[in-house]
Image (cartoon, rainbow, N blue to C red; front, top):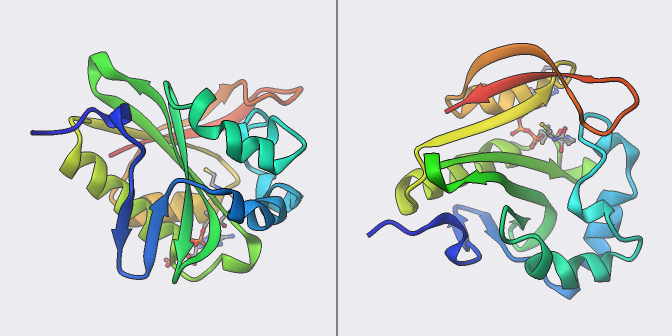
Length: 177
Ligand SMILES: CC(C)(COP(=O)(O)OP(=O)(O)OC[C@H]1O[C@@H](n2cnc3c(N)ncnc32)[C@H](O)[C@@H]1OP(=O)(O)O)[C@@H](O)C(=O)NCCC(=O)NCCS
């Protein structure tokens, strides 16, 4: 029997990577992530981890306030916090979900995003009734596009103007798996 996506907080493990709920002990890593403008250069302005100045408040409220339409998990490599994975924009009626990820800068270039997205896809198609997975990237974000390509996502819409919270519309590429 396939699960409904948001019926529980996922715990996803594969190789050296684990995607699981954030805990208060991850505050230091989360602080390092949210404080780095390089990480957020190609991301929307309205992400949940930026909603409160205090990252402990973010962690405490993460699974109360945002579990209905979005879940954010920590990404851990060999047990060390290295970033966030997000499931958002859940559409139960059409079995559709969008995915996102962001890593500490010191964790880039090691295949962690590619591996994490692979685990997310396997979980969604293996364990839940999700039938469509989508993702959006800023057109400039070549590394993220590559992560999607390596996981079998197809580019379906190019340079679509969207509101990502900036003054000007953001030009986004749309991907489907
Ligand atoms: C995008 C991001 C998640 C990638 O994480 P990562 O763990 O470094 O990614 P991986 O190592 O799994 O793979 C990156 C791929 O992109 C390639 N790449 C990296 N920078 C690139 C660039 N500027 N141009 C083209 N390709 C690039 C790498 O070579 C690698 O591909 P390869 O295996 O074919 O060589 C990470 O850089 C990040 O957190 N960035 C900030 C947040 C963000 O932009 N998130 C995505 C929003 S849609």
